[in-house]
Image 1 (cartoon, rainbow, N blue to C red):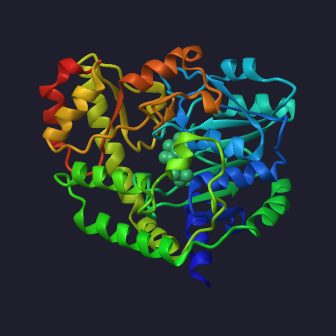
Image 2: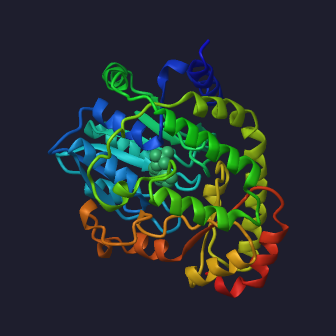
Length: 381
Ligand SMILES: Cc1ncc(COP(=O)(O)O)c(C=O)c1O
């Protein structure tokens, strides 16, 4: 069996599906683009998505010629409600994106039923949710298709990387045609990614986190290393050259290895999340609502703070690897969101949450994190 097939089989076993439903890509966003194309989306079509996501999501929609239609999030679940989605449906709606946020899902079945009744496709954005469940069902198997990410800080990592799961049979054939057009990662792509994976494995420690993160972001901004996003993707809506790229062997090998320790890593994250949750409840802070806790496979624990910049600065001084994801409704774009058709004032929850959110790491020993929370508890909302 080829390394690619072994990796697909391992992924499929983890999800409990057949490997022929899985396609592998250079990044998760490419999987989204591929499935939108397989669904036949193009100019004149609309795709509903949360106004609290990563900018590469509306980019993938815009690259097909379709229009992103944003819906505000529910501030408790950080996901979209079925009612808000229903209001955004028009005769042009062709697909609805159901996003899993940091492991959290919400009203997935209700949104699925609504879409099915109207002949609209559903796609789960499971970039944060591999291995988790929602109401007893495996993330990624509740919609027509789902895309996943295995980028640096995702449930398991291949450096960067992504995959797509097809649940709707009719999508298989058109997807095969699109997959046949994938370009192979270049020699430089593979060498740089291997070097980054090595650096992350051997150099990334709690105390080197902030220095390495700054260095990585700076280098990827310059286009010198394989970045999570190219600078083009963060300033405009034109598809970068070589975007529709397949997965390399480097990534498959790393994925096969990472998957072996995923169950253990998930258990640790969940146990740590419960400790953080109890602390937040005890201190009367905002936390993940109890009904959503049960099946939640935490990637990170979201908390809201009064002054995010000051809080992150304190974390950096304490050498605590706090996450600064979703600092904008279209992370990480802090400038105007007009190119993506998003008027921030129309989405008050997404705006507020993106101004106050930080995410807590759930790996390893939590004692330093808990001390930090105790020390700066007045800063937490
Ligand atoms: C919500 C969300 N969707 C999509 C993506 C894109 O995933 P990838 O970087 O693998 O393309 C990300 C990336 O972090 C994300 O956070």
